[in-house]
Structures are given as C-alpha cells and as structure tokens.
Image: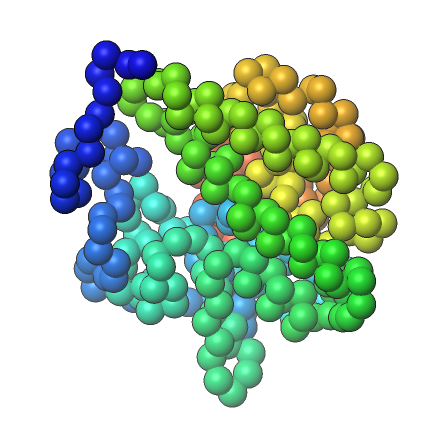
Length: 284
C-alpha cells in the first residue's frame, strides 16, 4: 500500500492545480466558453477535427471513398486545436454538444446534418455512400460488433493507459499497471480474432478496421505513446501483420496526416481542402 494513499473527500469539487495543460482542459461543466463561428469551405462535407487516432478514423474513410472514385466524398477538413480549447467555441459546440473531435456537417441536402462521435460519423458516411459497411446480414452485424468494441475499448487505451503512461505529471504504479494489463488484454482479443481472418470483421475491409487501426494499429507499429517495447507488442503477430497491411493502403497514408500538427513535416497537414493539399505534403 502506498504511503501517500488518497482519501476521497465526502463531496468532490473541481480543483485545477497542475501546470499540465492536458489535465486542465476539461471541467465539470459542458457548453461553449466563448463565441466563435466555425470556418466553412466549399464542399458539402465539412469536417472539424484533429489528427489524433479518433480524428484519423474519419479522414481515412473519406480518403478511401475518394480512392474508389466517390467524388461526392470530397471534403474540407478544418483544424480544431484541442490544446487551445477550440472545441469549446460556440460554433463547435453547436455541432457537437460533447466538445470532442471529430465532428461533421453535411450540407449536401435540403437540411443540414450534424454528426458527432467518430463511430456515428463512420456509419453515417458508410451508409450515405454504400461502402465499407454491409447493408444487411451477418457481415453487417460482425462489422458493427467490432466497431462498437473499438468505441468501448479505446478509452481504456487512450484515456487510461496513454494518459497515465505518457501524459500524467506523476507516473504512478497502480494505474499504469492496471491499464497496461487491459491494453494487453485488448491486443490479445484482437490477435486471436485476426488469427483466422484477414481483417477484423472477416475477409472484408470495413469501417471496423478504420476505427481500430488508428489506435491499435499505430500501437502495434510503435507509433503510439512510444510504448511498443513496454507492452511487448511484437508478440501479437497477427495484429502486427494486420497493422502493416492497413498501413500500406495509400488512402490510409493520406488520411492519417489530415489535421495533423505533430510528427515529421511529411506527416503534417493542419487543413485539407483538396487532394492537392495532401499530395504537396506527401511529395516533399
């Protein structure tokens, strides 16, 4: 038992006390903190996001759709800098009351459609364009099973393991051990699934792969939290095989850099308004 054991107070109150900006962004109150309209580009699809794993899900799907020749999937991607609290502007909150990226506005119809939560956006776009999500039957159910597995599991990897291992000011044994165990359990779940199928939901590439790869694929490739050695990701051979297979797709290489403001110069594209924007970065 720790000598610095924490005793919870009878009533919890919010007391920001850290200089760590990632610890101080959120508060117990939702809603807009300041007035500012969102930028609007020329395409019917307007994406407001950041190139984190959750943001990559949607831009990968959009780039996969464009690779198939679906011209209606052209989009403008506007940067939402969560480190600067841009997710709390009045414009963004009007699209997503939960103040989390990504958020999408579809202006293609008579009525503007606002879509938030990454899985909801994936389903919306897949159904809108009839791609990467079977319309019925067992394959559709399998795809949705794994899509929602990702939604329920990734917070343990990101907000759990990632926060305490990579971002917390004080590295604490108990939470790191707790969430490292869960991250490895999830990798084992994926590894056993991928032992008998090419993709996560079977033999068809789907929005389930696009939802899971930015988190677990990047982790398996050593590109998330610099935690590959710590979690011994190389032992999950089926996940590593799948991660490399997805990474090799040109649309994935394009989608993963959109709204990205970190990494190597050829990995950063804060805003995207046309295919030429991505080409210019990748061809540096």
